[in-house]
Image (cartoon, rainbow, N blue to C red; front, side):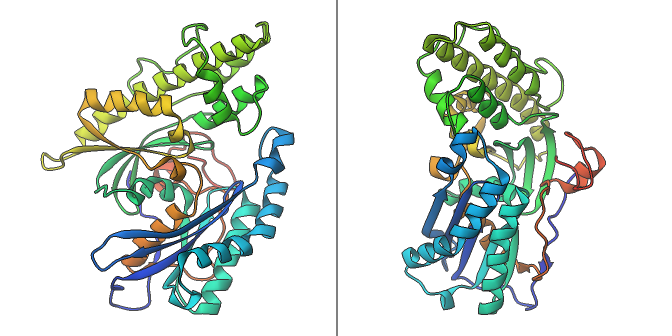
Length: 381
């Protein structure tokens, strides 16, 4: 079911005319980031600056992100990071036309830190505020590097989300499949932690896998052969933990298990995506060609996964679009881009826009048929 993200229309009846400049702020997890983007008269997007402060050292002793530590770090760094982004952009605050900030989903303390900074700037500068869905930032991120017209099929694969969506237009998304339990990125991180590979787990596991044998361990491929586009990674994650427990825990065992796990994820993502490709094609008119496929999110930086999806696209007749590696993980350039796109259409939010721990891109279908549970805070997906 398609859904709009329901931004309120701007006060002015006429749409803003380019050029215009938007400051983006991202603080949904453990990256404090700010970026400045410009939309030119010709419709091109220029990245004037993009600054990211990592919290890896803060969380490494715990083997994962600690929400309280993340929120505190965001509050300590956010003003400095915004100032650095503005200085590197070569413009002044008075040149800004709008402020865009992640308002969900994410760790609520971090989301609040970034959103409150954005509200203060928007109020002080008397310019529009745009609350951005973090997932929409990922969905649009390939457009930071090259044009990627609507519609397209999106595989959003990260630490918190694994979804397949038909992206019909800005704010118009139709879910084709989602994980029913763990996200692929979480499976990477937890498997890396089990093997003692360190933090952040995903990149460490990918590096370890380069030395391993992909056929050394027989691991499950959940939902293989089933006629839908949903994912499940909990069983695969458990299988890795059990296999490591009975191994000799040598460096070779770690490499072989990492390679076998990574190959299993590649196989699952490709097979489930192939189902979604058929569903996506069936919903298109004959004029909706060529077929475009976008992979985005932190796990999209994994080279083995990219190569697997490139092969799939060649087989299925899709053109592959992916953001540059530096824009796969959390960043503010994608948030500023989403802000640019909404601002260009006259969308903005009131200053009372709320921070949301959960905010599915496909909110209506997630309410009616949640793929991975629901609660007082709303559906996860």
